[in-house]
Image (cartoon, rainbow, N blue to C red; front, side):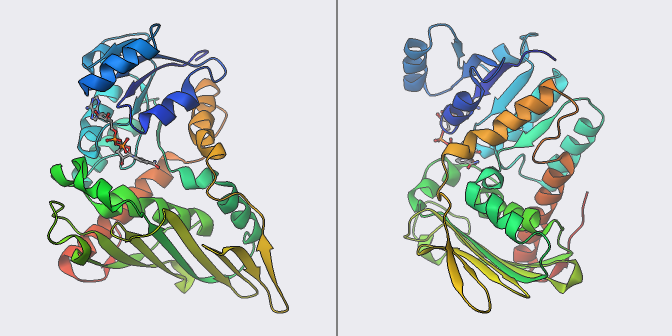
Length: 327
Ligand SMILES: NC(=O)c1ccc[n+]([C@@H]2O[C@H](COP(=O)([O-])OP(=O)(O)OC[C@H]3O[C@@H](n4cnc5c(N)ncnc54)[C@H](O)[C@@H]3O)[C@@H](O)[C@H]2O)c1
C-alpha cells in the first residue's frame, strides 16, 4: 500500500487522530463522520475539502478508504470494527476495542483470518518518561510494581459513559496502566484479584463502579497492584512505582525519581508528554505502508490486554481470585 486514505468516526479524541494522520507522509483524511449536528456544521466550514457526514455507511461503501479510525463511544466500537473488517479497511480503534469476551473472540478470529491491521490507542507506550523508565529497568529483577490511573475527570463519567450498557472503568481507563505494567514487565499475568466500589458516585447518574483495585500475579511471583480511579478529585495522573532488587523508580507529583542504595536522583523527562502522542498512530500508519515495519503494539499484546481486563471484571463480580484465560 502506497498511500493511506483515512476516515475518522467521532471528533472528540478523534481530532487527535486527525492531527496524527492528516498530511503525515502520504496520508490523508478523506472523510469525517460525526453525529453531533453542531460539530458537523463547524467541521464542514473548517474542512471544505474533506467529506463530512453523519452516516458511517459513507465510509464503508467508499472503496478508496483503506483505514478507519474509530473514536466513537465505547459501545459502537465492536460493530464499527466488524464493518471495517468486512469492507477490508485497516483499523485504529480507541480503547476499549469491544465490551464483551464474546465480541473479543469474534474480532480476533476475523482479524487473524484477514490481512488487515488493527491498533488500539494505548498512548502511554510512547510517553517519553515511560519509554526511558523501560530502558532503565530492562535487565533488572523487578519484584513489585504499583501503577495508579488517577483520572481526575470525574465529570466525564456523567456524560455518555453513564448511558451506555456495558461501560467498564477497567476497560475504559484502567486498561492504560494495565498495558503499561505488562509492557514494562514484558510478561502477561497468570491470575487476577480485583475489587471495586462506587462510594464517590452513588448518588449520581453513573451506576457502575467508579474505583477499582486490581492485583495481578505474574510469572516468577512478581506482583502488581493497579488502580483505576475514576472518582478522585485530583489532576489527571499516572503514578508509578517500580521496585527492583537494586533500585526503585517512581513517578509522582513531586517528579520522577530513581533511588539506589547510595543516592536518589531526579529523572528529567517531560511528563505529561503531549508531543509524543501522535507517534503511536503514526508508527501504525508506517506499519501499514511497509509490512516489514513492526507496530509498537502487536495484535497479540492487544488481545492479551483485553483478556486481562475481562478477567479483572469477572473477579470483581464473583469476588474471587481467578486464573486468566487468554483467547
Ligand atoms: N486513548 C486515550 O487516551 C483516550 C482518551 C479519551 C477518550 N478515549 C476514547 O475515545 C472514545 C471517544 O471518547 P471522547 O473522549 O472523544 O468522547 P467525546 O464525547 O469527547 O467525543 C466523542 C465524539 O464522537 C461522536 N460520536 C460518538 N459516536 C459516534 C458515531 N457512532 N458516529 C459518529 N460520531 C460519533 C460524538 O458526537 C462526539 O462528538 C471513547 O471510546 C474513549 O474511551 C481514549
